[in-house]
Image (cartoon, rainbow, N blue to C red; front, side, top):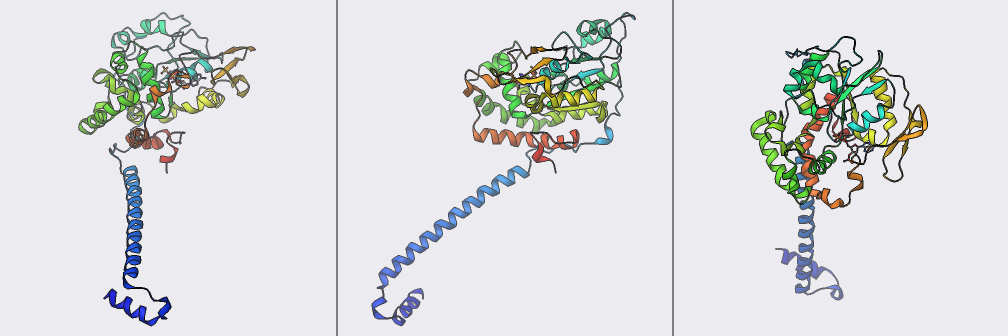
Length: 383
Ligand SMILES: Nc1ncnc2c1ncn2[C@@H]1O[C@H](COP(=O)(O)OS(=O)(=O)O)[C@@H](OP(=O)(O)O)[C@H]1O
């Protein structure tokens, strides 16, 4: 039939413009092939787009909705033994720093302690609240981890691990139901990288295993499917106190903030918790100081003029308010990932980053409700 149409069309035009049937067929064949190619290409692109949006929108895991009606309602059964001397210049903390690990918790505490009315522990981290034997020792035992202070000053003890230890919120409430909690969060993948390299330099139980991996990329290839499967099979119960049953997975699970925050919020109302953005502490520490001094009702001793970038490391240092000529930088162990001898050790492939983003998305989305405002790493997930 097409042949008839072409023949009739061919006869209707002047003889000089007529083509032989073979040539017409060839042209048609080429056009047909071109058309098919365009269609295949367009469909492939559409398929890829579909796949991307489909997997982005449908989560691999759906956490229970955030239940704000529970916040702060849970009573503590823990008892804090106030068994230390009365006329002491050491008292239980007014504020607890609870992680997250590797999000800039030390930068926060060290910088804020340049405000003379913020008294932090002489130990960088107390690691006291989650250890049963220490907790049983009451205030007498805790005292050696706490700073001296005068009336009107704020005493602080911070330990990143407190975020993920299920016994800690109840114990913090047992010390004081008015306890203020400060939590710094940061990009989960960035945090993982920092945790990974940090662990290789410690004596933690999983240090040897982590050191056994050539780099973070091979670790993620092996462990991401495993952690996902455990969450799908066991639910969020798997995340609770993971340090005691699957500590290696903590490199991932320490970044699942929403699970741990839901537990903290069972004990403390939202307005007793200050959420800080680790990215802000890193790039604009004066803004973090502003928020913390407000939250703790401290004089705004630390301002923009007290911070400067150290040319050598690229990280912020501070000028001491009592003598601006004296400066303070964090120890070399902080800011490790920005000055790596071999950056390929922490490199991840594009597909691995996509897979990790997908992994953290359902939990990060919950932060919109929990924190109540967006932060650098999940702003795009909040409606
Ligand atoms: N001013 C300044 N100097 C150096 N480092 C800074 C600073 N501000 C924030 N940070 C970030 O702090 C990260 C270490 O986080 P933490 O102190 O929370 O680590 S820890 O959990 O207490 O071990 C550290 O991460 P790494 O680079 O992986 O060490 C930094 O990103």
